[in-house]
Image 1 (spheres, rainbow, N blue to C red):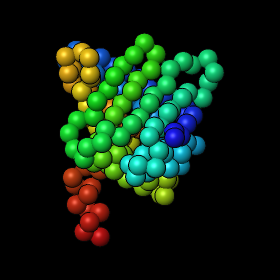
Image 2 (cartoon, rainbow, N blue to C red; image 1 turned 90 degrees about the vertical axis):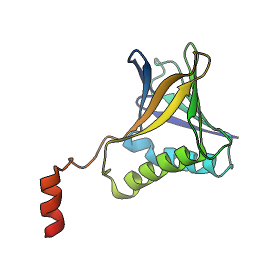
Image 3 (spheres, one colour; image 1 turned 120 degrees about the vertical axis):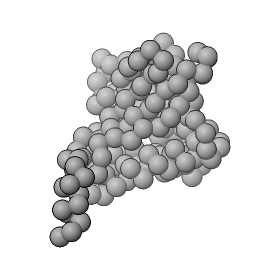
Length: 151
C-alpha cells in the first residue's frame, strides 16, 4: 500500500562537487499528508510514500521507503526523472517530529532539517536530503536568546 502526496515542489538537486543536496519543500497545504504518510511509513502500515508535483507539466516523483533499520545513512537512487529514498527509523522519526510540530503550531522553530544520505550506484557519494517548511521563526542571536530567557 502507498500514499500519494501532491505538493508545489517535489525536489531540486544541487551538486556541490563532492556532495549532493536534495531540497524538498513541504508546503503548508500538504503538511498533514506528509505527517500522515511518514507516520504510517514509520509504523509499517504502508510501504511507500510517493510525492508528485502539483503541476501536470512537471515531471518526476519522489518515492520514500523505510530502509528496515533503525540507524545509519539514508540511501538515494537517482534515476532519469525520479528519486527513490530509503530512510532509517530514526530519520523518519526526526522528519515526522519536525513536520508534526509545524502542523500543530503553524510555524517551525527552524526552516529546515537535514538527513544524511549516500547515493547508491555512484560510489557511495555523500548527500543530504533537506526538508523545508515555508514558515519559521526568525533565528535569535545568543544575546537575544539570553535576554528572552531572563524575562
